[in-house]
Amino acid sequence: MIADREITLTVNGERVVQRVAPRQSLIDFVRENLGLTGSHVGCEHGVCGACTIRVNGLLVRGCLTLAVQADGAEVHTIEGISDSGEIAALQAAFLERNALQCGYCTPGMLLTAADLLKENSSPSREEIRQHLSGNYCRCTGYQSIVDAVEDAARAMAGGSS
Amino acid sequence: MGTQRGTWRVCPWISGEFYRERKLKPAPFDYAKPHSAAEVFDLLEQHGDNARLLAGGQSLLAGLNMRLSTPAILIDITGLESLRGIVKSNGVLRIGALTTYAQVKASAEVARAAPMLCEVISWIAHPAIRNRGTIGGSLAYADPAAEMPACMLALDAQLEIAAKGGRRKVAAGDFFRGIFETDLKPGEMLTAIEVPVIRANYRSGFSEFSRRRGDFAMSGLAAHARFDGEVLSDVRLAYCGVDTRPVRERKAEQVLEGRSLDREVLAEVKAALAEDLDPPDDLQATGQMKLHLSQVLAERVLTVMARAEVG
Image (cartoon, rainbow over all chains, first blue to last red; front, side, top):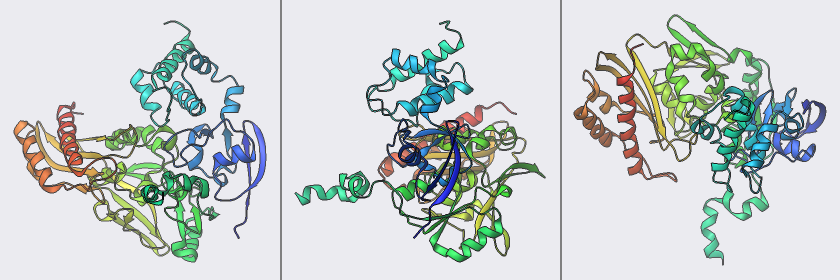
C-alpha cells in the first residue's frame, strides 16, 4: 500500500493543504480535489494542451506534472487568471472573432496566447501559430484563433490598427 | 463482431475499452524526493530496476500514463541543486542535467558558446513542455526521434555520469545504444553535459521535418563544420528519427571534407546518404520518405550554414 503525501501549495492565491496519491496528476488534483474544472483533460500524454496551467509563473502541462511535485508551488488556473482580469482583452477577442466552438481547448489556448503576448507584444501570424502549436483545436481550424490573438495584441498595444 | 474490432487492440489506448477500463492513468507508484546525490544512490541501490529517476518528466510521465512501464517508485531528482547551472571554463561549456529547455534557450552563454543548442530548442516540443523538460532527461530517456541526442553527437559532447563509487565521462557517440537504451548502468545518474565551446571558423545548424511543429521529428539534422572561406572540413552530420538511435552519417561527412558546397557536392552527399541510411517505416512516414526528407535537410542546413555571416 502506497501512502498518500501531504502537499501545501497556493492555488489562485489561496493556500491549500491536501493529501494526494503520488500518481495523481496536477490536473486531476485541481479538477477533482479542488473542483476547478476550467482546465480540461484531453490526451493525458502531453500532446493536446487542454490541461495547460501555470506553476510558479511558468506554463506547464497539467497532465505531465504530478500533484506531489507541486508541493510548495504557486499554481494558477484559468479560473484565477480569468478573475484577475489579466486576459480580459484575449477573452473579448476570442468572443468577437468566434475563436471557439465547443470550448474544450479554449482555457489552454488563452493561457498559451497570454504567455506569448507577455514576451512578444506584436507577434506575426507565423509566431502565433508556432507558439500555439502545442494546443489542439478540433473545431475552428485555428484561423479565427490566430485572428483573435492578433486583435488582442493590437488592443493591448493601445487599440491602433 | 470480435474480428472487426480486433484490429483496434493493437493500439489499446485508442480503443474505447481502454478509456473505460483503465483511462490514461499510471499504475500506482511510490515517490521520493531526496535532496542529495548520496540519498539518490541509496534509493537506487535499494530499489534497483523498480525505480526510475524523475527529472522534468515530460517523456517519462507520458509513458507512465500509457503504462509503457510501471516502476514501483519514482525518485524525483529536481531537488538536487548541484545538477543545475550553466558554466563556461577552459573552452568547455558545462550544462547541468536538470537545466530546462527554456533555460538553455534563454542563456546568453549558450548562444555564444554552442549556438546549435539555442537554435534547436524552438524545434523541441512546445512552450509548456520546454518549461519543464530537461536536457539530461531527454538524453537519459534516449528517444531515437528526440533532437537533443543528435545535437550531442554533432557537437562531440561528453556526458558526465555519477554513481556511488564516483564519476565517469562518456562520449555522446558511445552513450546511445538503441531505442530508449543508453550506456547508463544500474545505480548511475546523468549529472551534466560538456560541450566544446565553438571555435573560430566553425558553424552549426539544425532543422527537422515533423507532422506538426514541435512534434517528434520524421527526420532531423544537427550539423557542425569548419569553414575556411567556402571550404568545409571537420564535418559532423548527426540525424535523429531515422534509426534506433541518433546516428552520424560518415560517408556524407567524408564527401564534404575539403570541398565547397555546390550542386555536384550536394548530389554526392545525397547519394552517400542513400547508401548509409535505411530508415524503418513508422506511423509518421515510410522509410523511403524519411530518406528523402533527410536528403532535403542536408541541402537546406548546409546551404544555410555556408551562407552564414562569418562571426
